[in-house]
Length: 150
Image: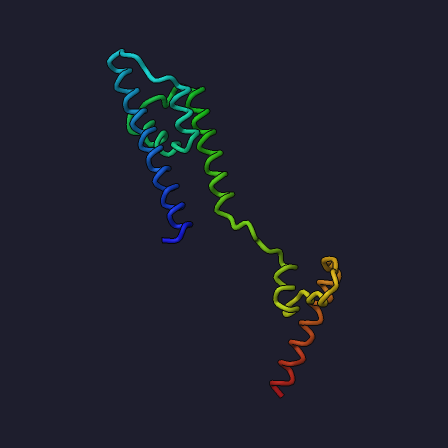
């Protein structure tokens, strides 16, 4: 197995473990609350959710019907879940996204955006240059299709 695969599997395993732990802590806290015994602190439950167990926390909250109406806790848990979803989305996006200008340059000037001459650094084309390139491409395309049909 390549190193990246091992690292990915380790991270998935860690995420599953922290979510199972958080789910179990919600169940344990609910059980203790019914018996009137010593309880988990809200800080501990929220810390487990913050460390990656937010899915287990939300599932535990729903399954055990625990801390659903306690507003400061429920609001903080929802905020943690939202931040983790945003973070996961940001990590899922490729870091090397290319702009249309870069794509045109990588294609050697084919398409709408002209290629950069070798050895010279050129600023990105202005919008008017892009419109002119588009117009020229359309004229060439129309001319070639007219010649082909005759």
